[in-house]
Length: 338
Image (cartoon, rainbow, N blue to C red; front, side, top):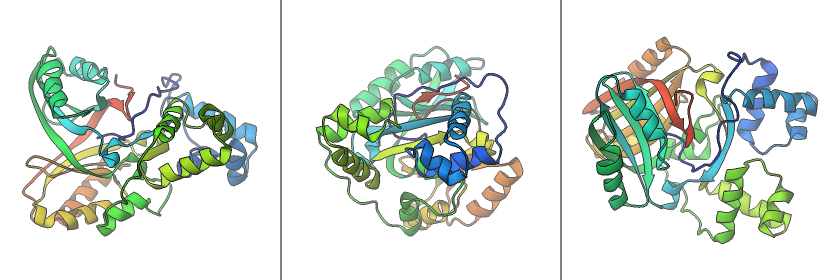
């Protein structure tokens, strides 16, 4: 389950030239931009105590790795638009990479990954409705060479996304806080044509200056700034600096599915949302009702997390944990494995 915002961006770099080692200034720049992805170089420079040109060079260097990029887009789950399904595709031996690459090429796929365990590829698909999902699963996906079996489950409630993982901050996002406290998110606003045009411009360039945004929309800067703030505050627009967890020192990524009866779902959600390592969380259909992802510095950290956190859950009827071995698409963008 990747970041759910639809985005048309591509990775700026391919990670050539070997891994980049981040120093204290790199982390300081990323910290500011995680909090405010649209911060100007002047604002970032003032916060980190460096020159604007230095900040610009550092950011360009990180963007060139392909491990850091900006994304923006509306979140259809919060708007109630279309349906999202998690599809597990079982593959014949020797075909998993080809199947994953073919799935990643599909425009409906927002994330595609492979994990430890059986020869399965996991894909998050977003489509307009159930008829389109059936056609996609039984048609295009089911007919891919190497596909042995396909199972699917629907996302019933999106609780947290990658935007709510904040490795630099102890303070939880408002979305995470709602999940921790068992509160629903506020009702989404009604979006008009101006809102959707604004989000489309941000998909093209998440850091487009406000004056340029206003000019493209043919409105005043105040109107553009107010509309953007309204969309961000309502959580229907995700605008963020995406950083691969491994790039920040969290190379161990896990996915877990838990069967929790509905009578115990609320306390389970609260417990999991309170864990900073949990990066994404959703309620799904099927025998396992909770789907989540977490990020860790080491395998030992993951083991301690799983032993401590999952032990605290009541009446779990089924559990399945796996470590991600490669991502072919993440946040709607082709990954390094693809």
